[in-house]
Every structure is written in C-alpha cells, then in structure tokens.
Amino acid sequence: MCNAHAIYKYGVGLLVSFFGYTSTSMPEQCKFHTFLFYIIEYLIMKKIKLYIASTIDGYIATSDGDLDWLREFPNSEKSDFGYKNFMSGIDAVLIGGQTYRSLLCMDVVWPYKSKTTYIISRKPIDIKIDCDIYNITKNAIEEIAKIKNEEGGDIALFGGGILTKMLLQHDMIDEMTISTIPILLGGGISLFPVYFPTSSWYIEKTELFKNGLMQTVYRKVSE
Image (cartoon, rainbow, N blue to C red; front, top):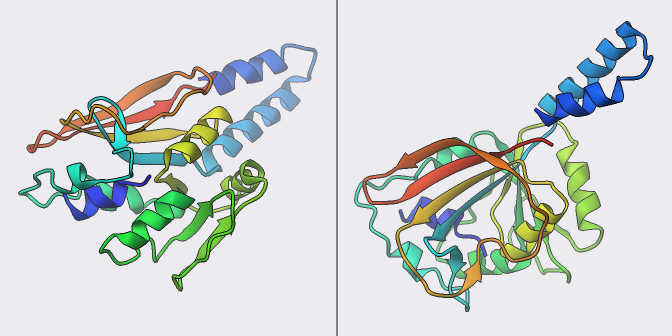
C-alpha cells in the first residue's frame, strides 16, 4: 500500500569486510586497488529508498487499504514534507501490485510520469497508463538487483508492505524516510510485516512539522 503520494497531495562495514579479506599476503598495491574498487562500487551503486507514512502504532493503511486518515490529516501550510526534494534524486520507482491499483482508484494524475516505474506483482497486471511502466512477475529480486546496478539516480520504494518485507529479507533497502502521523489506528496493514532479519540503522535526520507530522530519515548501518 502506497501512501507517499497521499502525503504529497494532502498534506563502516565495507571497510571491515575489506580488511578482513586483505589480511592475507596480498601485495600492498593490489590491496589498495581492491579497496578503491569496493569504495567506488559502493558510491555509484543506486540505493533503494523507502518513502512512506505510518501511524504511531505502525500502520500504513486500514485493513481494507483505506487512506482517509492520512488524506484528512491537517496540512494548512500545504507542505509537501520534502517529497519534491526526495524525488529530485530518483530515477526509478518500485511499487507493489496493490499499490498500483490503489493509485488508479485515487483522484490523481499518475505521479511518476518522469520516472521509470516497476510494478512488482505475482500475476501480470493490465497497465492502463501510457507511461514508462514495467511489470515484473518473475525473479523479482534478481530483476531489482539488475536495476540497482544500472547507472543513474536512486530508486524510490513506495510500498506496499509485502514488497517492503521482501526487500528487507534480501537486505536491499538502503534508506528509509518514515513520516509518522500522530494517529492511532488500532489495526490495519503493518508498515513492516513479519518476518525479516535483524538490521541496524542510524538516524540521519529528524524533522517535526507544525502540523505534528514527524519525519525521520534512517540509513542502514553496513555490517
């Protein structure tokens, strides 16, 4: 379930691995070149960035996918909560099949016209929009890995929960921007469906907006 567009409308480990690998009798020059290779690869590889809104109790939608609680949240200053700035560094978008169908039901123009969009689904989807959109139904992780290794800007992940869980299970999410709305739903679709491996993250930035929305940017700690 994607709610990022609703926000817009409404409202060290690499070094450890390297030095562990080079602790043998590798010549110093070869060690240095290998080190540079890994650093450059890390810097130029696309990053997958989750951008999503959540309630205090960790839900992104009601059990039937409704987002009225988010659309009706006050935004008197008409802030986009950093959405345009976030999208300025994005070349591609990942969404799940349910997210795509939800967007079609919303009274909005397709929000990712200038981006390449990949819909990840178990079954083929009838794409009804004349934009740069592709449907991936098989070998999703392998296909996403290929996209991540292409040149260009980063990849935005807008949900839903199943797709987010799958990428977390394969350690493929690099950054998360989570906007917490001061509302308790008491149930619904979870931001992070169980289960996935433990991972460590550090807080890069936290911003509190005047309407009470708190946005936190997390970056994954490399192991």
